Amino acid sequence: MQRLFLSITIVFTLCFSFQAQENTVAPKYSNEFLSIGIGADALGLGNAVVANTGNVNSAYWNPAGLTEIDKWLEAGIMHSEYFAGIAKYDYLGIAHSIDDKSTMAFSAIRFGVDDIPNTTQLIDNNGNIDYDRVTTFTAADYAFLFSYARKLKIEGMSLGGSAKVIYRKVGDFANSWGFGIDAGLQYQKSGWKFGAMLRDVTSTFNAWIFNLDQETQEVFLNTGNEIPENGLELTLPRLIIGSYRKIEFGETGIYGAGEIDLDITTDGRRNTLIRSGVASVDPHAGIEVGFRSYVSVRAGLSNMQYVKDFDDTRSLNLQPNLGIGLNIKNFCLDYAFTDIGDISAALYSHVISIRIKLDKPNNAQRD
Image 1: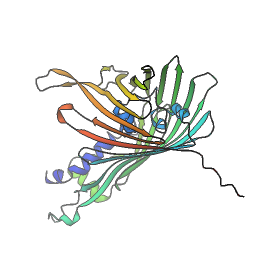
Image 2: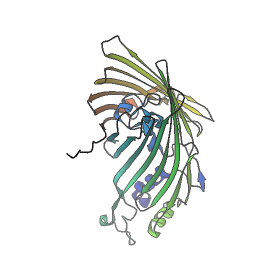
Image 3: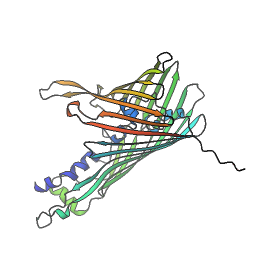
């Protein structure tokens, strides 16, 4: 029992990251770090941006939106922290407008927990507690997206796709490489925008390789834990559809806009507003009020699910989000105040992201 207590940190981390390991598994919430979202502008809108996204962050939300970039280069960065700063989430994106019809982009995402204590070797072979044997490790997930988008011959329609490479690592204990494809479509007509994003089109796979030394394996066996085996983890396709509408209030420069999205997952029953044994539907919505392109105030609702209370009654839980955006020439600063969990737990996060737009540099002319 003592060793079980001492090794709880490493066991919890492995269980959280890998699910039950078989030769090939398709668990719920696989690669869920890619569902958090990027860009404070989108997070403030409750992630309801699939139809309207049109900047460097579109490589993540809907690559078809990359065709809306009208500058030679656009870059975006974001940093946020979750669970009282325990987990760090970082993003970097770069998009290049090839011509007036096509755009390419590269994105990098990291979600990690650093300095996790490894207490599996706290007790030596003689049964003595030796704190010098406690080490630390990092559990981190990385994703690299290579995206391309192009306007189609059909007026108002754009198509885009992203090839993604995923690397996940838990200290020296285990790591995996994964590959997948996302595809997106946008269509504009009569003041409306419609979007569809199909994540993990062909199912994304992660190939796990475990490297547990003999001492760690003995701790697992002595505490009644199974030694994980190498295998494949599949992430099943997810379809996100949305519609967007923007209304101008005369010539005042003031506008109002809103979008409603539906996330449709195919990995079985989830705790979402609409669910079944085959698919689950998670609706989310966002509204925005602004003045021209200079300033905008945002609000969104997401993560709608029923939560069972201690008296077995069920109540609808909503995740509220707020945000504000400032645009000064080619510099965009966005802030979001988001609730990442149960409202009653007050687990709020502050997210700030920056986007910079650059014109094509002119070659100096010689006299």
